[in-house]
Image 1 (cartoon, rainbow, N blue to C red):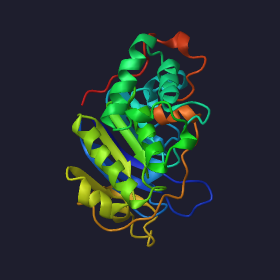
Image 2: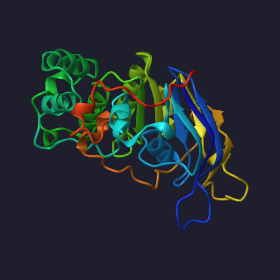
Image 3: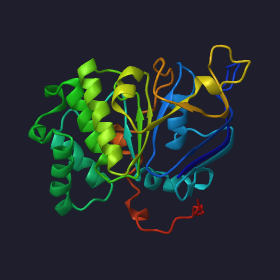
Length: 279
C-alpha cells in the first residue's frame, strides 16, 4: 500500500506550489493513471516515490517504508523493490538486450545461475525473446521500450513506476505498451503511470483508476499547475501534456529502480534502520 498525506512541494523561484496538501492512498495491486497538464506534478510525484527529491512537508509511505526515515545508504536497496520505466529508454548502447538485463541482475546482487531463466521468462512474457542478441540501435522505439519494461521487471518488483512510457512512440507501439502494462498489472504488481496518452489508455486499460492532478489544483492555480487536497478520480478520459520536469538519470541502470549500487554490496543483508509501517 502507498499512503500520501498532506504532501507539499514548491520549487524555488516559482510562484505556485506543485502540491499543497495532496492526499492519495493506493491499495496493493492497483493501477493508477496520473494525468494532468505540464507542471501539474506527475513527474514530481514519481521522483518523490523514488526518493530522488524530497517533499517540503507531508508524509509518503510505500509498503513498509516511511520514506522520510530511510537513511541515504539504504536508498539503493529501497529502489531495488521498485521497477521504473522512463520515456527515454536509458539502455546501455554497447550491450545486447540480454546483456542489459544481465547487468541489472549483477548490479543488484542477483545470482548468475538464476539470470538465464529469469531473463528468458521476462522476454518471453513481453514477446521479445527473439531480440535477445540485438543491440538497442537495432531496435525500434517500441522494442526498446519493451526492453525497458523487461529491465524494470527483472527483480520482481511489487511496484512499477512509469513516467510517460509512450511519449516517444508511434500510436501502434503506444497501444502495445499499454497492453503490456495491463498484462504486468494482472501479475499482481501495483502500477503508477504518468501519461498524456489518454485515448489509448482509456481504450486498453480497463482496471485503472485515474488521478487527475489538474482537478486537485488550488483555486489560485488557474492554469492547473499545482495540486492540493484529495486526488480527483475518474475514468481515463480527457487530455494532458507531457511533464515539464525530467527525471534525473541515476545511471542507465536506473530503469530497474536501482541507483547508486556500486560500492554498496557490503551493506547487503544488513539490518535496515527504517521503521516498519503497518497498513
